[in-house]
Each structure stands twice: as C-alpha cells, then as structure tokens.
Length: 262
Image 1 (cartoon, rainbow, N blue to C red):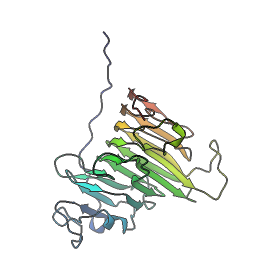
Image 2: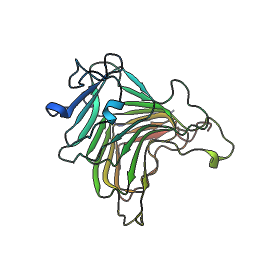
Image 3: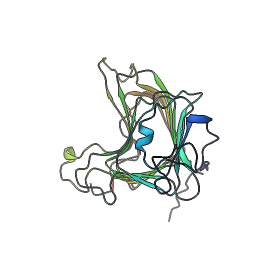
C-alpha cells in the first residue's frame, strides 16, 4: 500500500481586493443583472459578458462576475491596457460557487473547436476564481503583431470537460485542446529561444484541471511560464505542456493523465 502526499494548496480570497473607483469597476450577473443597468455596483449589474467586451479595459479596471451564475458561449475581450503595477482584474463577487463560463450546456460535441475565453493582446492581466469548462479550450490568449507585453496571472481557477472529441483512432484528427494556451498571428520572424516574445511572465497558480485535455497547451510565444501549486488529474493528454522559454514549476501534482479514452 502506498500513500500519495499532496502539497498544501494555499487558499485564495474568493473576492478581489478593493477595485479602483468610478468607471473602472464593473459587475455582471446573469441571474440578477440587466444590460440596461450601469453595471457599476453589485446592486446594478449588467447581465451579459458582451457588455464587458464593449469596454476599453484600462489599467486598474476590475470586472466582477457574480458567484453562482453561469454564462454560455465564447467571451472575447481586449486586455492590452493593464500593467504589472496596475493590472486589469477579472474575478468573482458574492457567496457560492465560482462563476462558471461554458460553451456547451452539456457534454462537449465531437469535433468541437470552441474556446470559452479569447483574450486579445493581454498585458497586465489577472484572472481569478472562475470555473471554466464544456468546450474545446478554456482560455486562449491571442496576440496579433503584439510584442513585449508582460504579466499575466491565472489564479484559483478550475478547468474541466475540455476536449475536442471523446474518441478517435487517429490522434492527428484531434483538434487542439487545452485548458489554457497561447496563439499568435505575427508578421515578424519568431524564434522560440530569442523571440521577440509576445508576453513575458505568465503565472498559473492554484489552478486545478480535471477531465480536460491538459492544464496548459502551447506557450511558445511566451517567455517565463510559471506553474505553481496546481493539480492536473484525469486529463486526456497530459498534465501540462511547457513550451515557453524559461519559467518554473513548483509544488504541483500531476496524476492519471493520458488515460482518458480520446
């Protein structure tokens, strides 16, 4: 008999620290919101994530999603306005289960290729306390001729039910699938060892992934990918794919991965 000792997973606050004042703070609730509201308080939240997509997310903007609520579809945002010192923050508010972002209402369709979140040209961004699943990919960081960005944190998020197909005899037929990955459309020549890199210093901390393809996918356009205190289990492909230039992995657990019949 053997015992698997898991590392202590540090707790994280369910609600972000006090947000910036005025129009840098927005609230969204599918169950209590209305897009005719101003979205500036927990008493007057918007209903849909599309309202956030219309914003120019400046440094210090905080987006609060109501705990216990669920949104479906792909949420695309532009997040280039933050900085390491004054980041854009997307997190939860209220009590209950983490806000859930999903593409499908049930099981993932065979051959699925949808993302739950598409974040364009992220710079100075923190994503915390979300439940993300039922799609081909969880968070896709997309860069289009955008270089020298820095500081992304994905913290205390749970990824699940993320895959392209349930079974396939030929692995090459599988759509790319991962909980978090980075893609880029670049005109300039790119070298994985020398760049120029789209983003530097990406940290995935305190996240879990279960019954997905993997925790991370391709991060070749990034420098310094840090995976800290994460658990990845029962994934179809791998625990994590690490393709960045540099970074660290600390206090993680990877088990029963590559076992799902994909």
